[in-house]
Image (cartoon, rainbow, N blue to C red; front, side):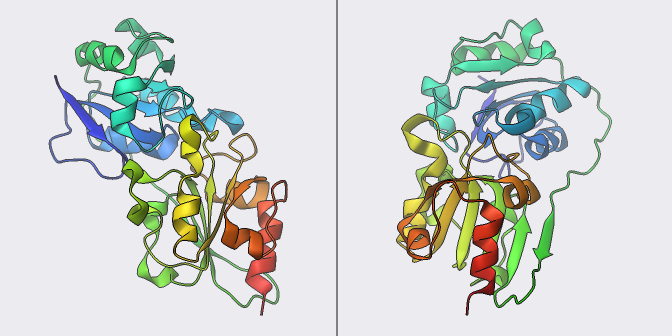
Length: 267
């Protein structure tokens, strides 16, 4: 079977071209661009609760425009960030027209869908536009701590130690590995809850970061576009918090921006 299982779409093997990728990543625009850049035949994502503006499945529409089949499994059926669970338990929630033409339909198992997608067209051979994700500093008045906006947690660098890191990424552990909760010891980290989903998978980074003394919370997928750090900050509503964040005054229902401003100004 020509399947590649990838807990995150940001780390793909070199032999992805022409293969069907089953990834634990959400299906926002950037993951779709990475599928195009890898010249995969087709892809299956986690729908991340679909969320605000349909951001959790935006890749399906992008790939349709580029002649590629794509589908997503329901976040309630398989843990986000866990491609093995998607293959063993995932149920398709949505598919684009090219995937439907291959026989993929909602309610089908991820495994059956992946097999059907082996017959999907490769699509045009033209090189797609380079994928782009933002990494931006953010400032406010009376700021005492650095704040960085990253559309993906994969963009976190060693420079972000002790910073408030606001991401567009889901709050699930990649492959269930606590060591991958955050690349550096930031002061705080913010994620999208991806609809929370099966086994609360969209929030599993939070207790792992508690163990490292890092404040962390998620925003509701319905309130902010997954994959968009600016939306996390400006539109996100806190849905889950860890103990460290609670001790610093974060509460469910607050606006993410309000919490981050307080932390950025704290002395």
